[in-house]
Image (cartoon, rainbow, N blue to C red; front, side, top):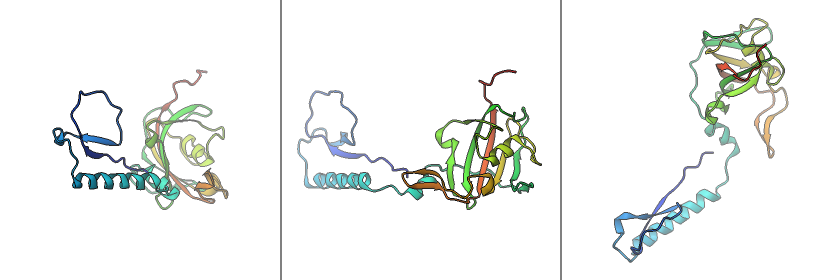
Length: 209
């Protein structure tokens, strides 16, 4: 869960020769530079600030809320899925005009991953960089391989394209929970997943054949 930082204002007790200081939670107020005393109201405000800070730092993080708030991103427009024999659903938001997704090559993609109810559980946008992945070699879940590389009725994505995928459990993580850390699993078993994919580019480090 994202926790907003707090800053509190305290009066400056005495004016002395300025020296560089390390930034801290509390900042001296410039409005009382000539006042060497702290009145009761200022002491009360300082106490409230310390109490608020202690509550924030001691409050436990809610693991269920992490996937909602940490990975919050903007959804792509909706579209009507086309379903193929494997059970994968796909629809193109934008077809793209570059090269086709290549087999056994590295590509850079941006994605937002949601559960069927729309809750976000992962996104490359939050990390601020595209994901580099290898297609067709089982390095990612089957639904992403088929949905980007194409095959069995799904056309391959083109560079610059945007596609939405609905991935059934058997093409995703199956019956077992995934994304587990310290006993908390981000993805429950038998989850249907919805991915918004943007095919950014071919990875520049690919070996030329």
